[in-house]
Amino acid sequence: MKIKMKTPLVEMDGDEMTRILWKEIKKILIEPYVELKTEYYDLGLENRDRTDDEVTKESALAAKKYGVAVKCATITPNLQRMEEYSLKKMWKSPNGTIRRILDGTVFRAPILCKGIRSYVPGWKQPIVLARHAYGDVYSAVDEEVASGEKVYLVREDAAGKVIKKTLVHDFAVSGGVAQAMHNSDDSIASFAHSCFRYALDCNLPVLFATKDTISKQYDGRFKQIFAEVFMQYEKAFEENGLWYLYTLIDDAVARIVRSEGGILWACKNYDGDVMSDMVATAYGSLGMMSSVLVSPDGNYEYEAAHGTVTRHYYKYLKGEETSTNSVATIFAWTGALCKRGELDGIAELCVFAKRLEAACVATIEEGEMTGDLIPLFSREGVTPRKLSSEEFLHAVASRLERA
Ligand code: NAP
Ligand code: MG
Image 1: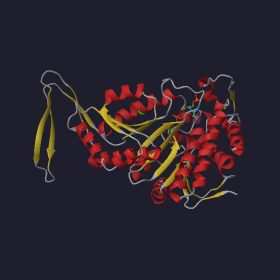
Image 2: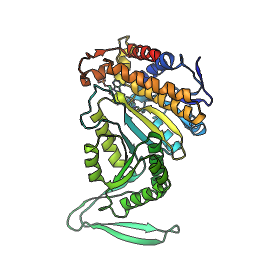
Image 3: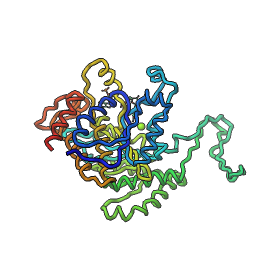
Image 4: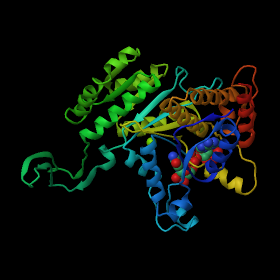
């Protein structure tokens, strides 16, 4: 008997190799067990172009309506893609559009397997990294300044009357550069809510850090808003034996390296940009990094952290065999199905999702994996064997069948 669903999942299809894997994952690993109910949106580049990108907005609004979405990787067009697909326009990044509509925070977590060692041997549990994806240097204005000029920070009221004018620097001796950036209380508070909510979901303690000893007003505001928002979650954290620690960014980096993992690390925009690459690399392959966008009002969009794996797709088009890692995309499906199960009170759906995840991990731990993992794998008594994209899915299916 297949598991029945109540509310549909919002299904956002995508491009290239991941689009090929998407169909196969559904056919081989999900549809035999679940009477899948989805509202389908084709975010493949051709359809985005055909619909003037309306389909991306519609899919994000559907995610807001139903609460849970699963997304395939998509092409963000550049000049070369404009030619390749004869596009009408250089459409914006779908992930950016979805994030703007859901006002969400992206959490990235590695999928761990025995035999695939982290470059930081002490990291035994996942480090989940949350990046505040609004403001700071990413929407700053900056200018070159000539020798002899002065730069001020000027504030006006709504009528345009100057309230305060502060000298940033007198460039009397030498020219240079100046920059002004901002953030908003609303966005910082949304970020804090998303982090605490997601930490409770995943049963993780939270580490948040800035440099408020130097940036007293700016980073001081982040620290203060996080402390205020945390008051709403303090009781739930205590009941679950979790903690929230605010510290300085230098101290946070040291703590993370010394830790065993098992932490949600909330980062300001720039820190998150830099540290997410560091954490992802330390855990091994891009094919093993999952990602979820969580909005402050509790909508979820699950996806793999990697892109459409173009090089493998061109091989596939030539009829050559590929060995593309589908684990992060499978985990996007299991994350979404399990969340749907939680929200709709369908326990079997969560049990199935956890079994499928365990089957993926067991397949790799027993030595059957895609090519990207082979050089990372070492486990006593197990000789790793490289499987094709499709063979890997069937290897997972055979273990799922046993479970
Ligand atoms: P990518 O698709 O992540 O691939 C980069 C390289 O990483 C691949 O060529 C492959 O290396 C390796 N890799 C990534 N995922 C893998 C997997 N599942 N299994 C095995 N190897 C994997 O990034 P990209 O080449 O920079 O971008 C390709 C397209 O994806 C672009 O059009 C970009 O816009 C889009 N993109 C979308 C998203 C998203 O939708 N979230 C994110 C990033 C990029 P080898 O070739 O050496 O095997
Ligand atoms: Mg980065």
